[in-house]
Amino acid sequence: MARRRSSLGFLGMFGRSGDLRQLDTALRGVDLHPALVPEGAKLTIVNLMKDHWSDEPPPQAYPPVALLLGYCIAGPEAFELSNGREHTLDAERRIEAALEAGDSFDAQIILMTLHARLISAEVLERYGLSTD
Image 1 (tube, rainbow, N blue to C red):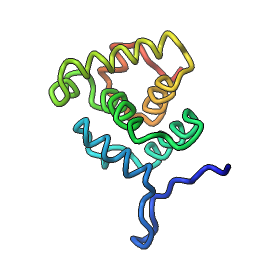
Image 2 (image 1 turned 90 degrees about the vertical axis):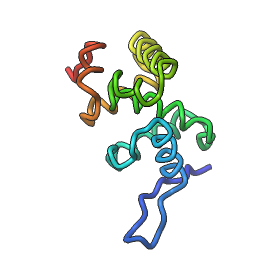
Image 3 (image 1 turned 180 degrees about the vertical axis):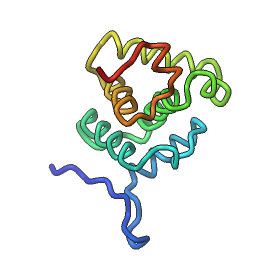
């Protein structure tokens, strides 16, 4: 079965695809305005999600992705102010597990924020991340 493609829309005539709208909604749910994430990065994220799930990612898959993405972009302090200690600890556990695992879905999200230069300097320093 052919995979459905994501769409940014075109000159206001065609709408954004459902996966990008769901990601935007999930980003707002972690208090990260979608405009702060470049469209190319969002397309990469939804494509990673499509690779991770055999079929279309289920709607409940978007909030955990946005949580990790939001933590990486906002940094620990700003993220905790908006989302609370429990969500911050969850994101930190996921980052630590991704660093141990090496190649995982969460590691790919973290790597994307690193290469897109979206990752917070605090996160870089805390986890010793670099592009080398």
